[in-house]
Amino acid sequence: MDQQLQTIALQVKALRQQLSELMQNSNSADAEIITASSTLDTQLQDYAQTIHEKRTPSMRTF
Image (tube, rainbow, N blue to C red; front, side):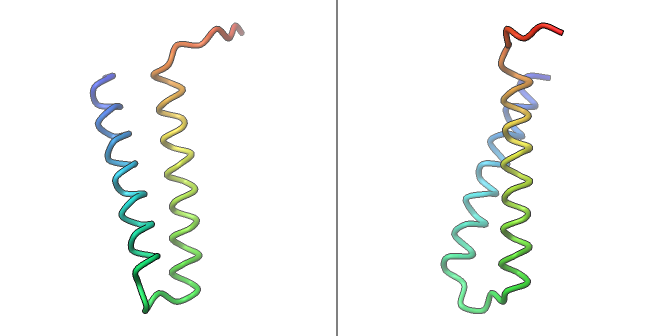
């Protein structure tokens, strides 16, 4: 499972980079596309952070 999460984390990182490059280099991106891309990037970042937290042992107790 850990290997699968690592693979997904790398894919998320690559997707976020692609999305960023697309938005920087696109002349045809309208406001709706930019907003949706920003929202998607935020969600992907949150997802990547969750994966990282699940993979990293913590000292938290419940």
